[in-house]
Image (cartoon, rainbow, N blue to C red; front, top):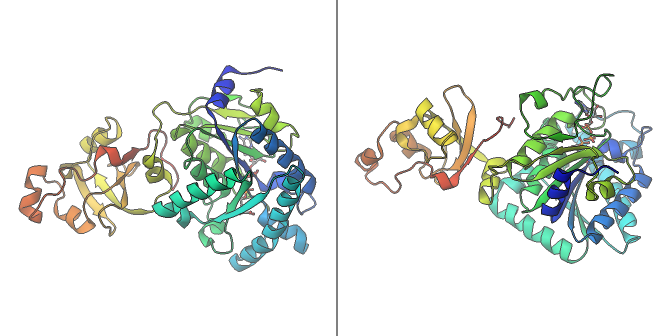
Length: 386
Ligand SMILES: Nc1ncnc2c1ncn2[C@@H]1O[C@H](COP(=O)(O)OP(=O)(O)O)[C@@H](O)[C@H]1O
Ligand SMILES: N[C@@H](CCC(=O)OP(=O)(O)O)C(=O)O
């Protein structure tokens, strides 16, 4: 058994495993839930908990289970149909988990979330408390999108469970994100290409790595490899290690715990975003945009400085003080997000002004900075698709 020092280090740092499992793992090719797979997965997750770690499971499969239960031949296209199918399938999904965990003396705890629940800072924190308490009761939170209300998630490419799992990981310090799918990891090109090879470790998610994902539309799952890379990008920028691994390997989590070279390990970024900035970076609702000049973009993006009014060229959106806005460079790239000290009206009036002149225009100057550097999450890697 070949073990890998990076993996051992990553595991030693991980007190919680956030495990995401995709539709392709949980459903059988002829449609419907693969209950045997769920039983094996539950046993594996219990082994992780027996190792002293906390587990949070993000499970897809509601739509897949509903398709099987209703005997449909493909994923419905109409939104209301999808919502109904997800609601019908989710009951089977959670029953299957409850049944499987009960054999190990544990309970499944159903947590259905929308992106809005994570955008709102107080519900984000409530969720963290609920997850802690579920663990204290020795139960396993099983998170899925609340598909019957989360219109956006069912419709869009990136509002999917891979990304949801990364946002959930950002609630937790010392977490590792494990994304289980139907393939043994990230390949250098589409796995059907005979020249493709599994990547064992990815140090940095750059353009070359992003280009390895070649997704085709699927009738059951939604994210594809691209969305797994986006999730990995979010989680590694928040200081978490990520493994994309084979969900149909019966011992996958045991092998990961043993530090075996299974799947693809993505190493955490050295200059990771921590604490509240993680929420600002990937979960918070975006209220507007500040377009800045090249000097301000360099100061904020490269040197970690505060944003001053003098570097702002244009304000977009209507926002209040304390909301989250994007900082956009002259090429139109979002370079950072931050909590703004001024309303959109005030920010528009002070565009291009030195801080010393703000009081002349607004009648007062509550802050020298438009966004203080402590409240800025810079996009250290590639711009994320939002
Ligand atoms: N470079 C790549 N390496 C591995 N898999 C890839 C790559 N590009 C595309 N894929 C596809 O991504 C799929 C896994 O994503 P997805 O269908 O969303 O699964 P899940 O239901 O587990 O979320 C694989 O089955 C594979 O066909
Ligand atoms: N909420 C949906 C999940 C859709 C989704 O993200 O699927 P996948 O790409 O298989 O992880 C469901 O339960 O079917």
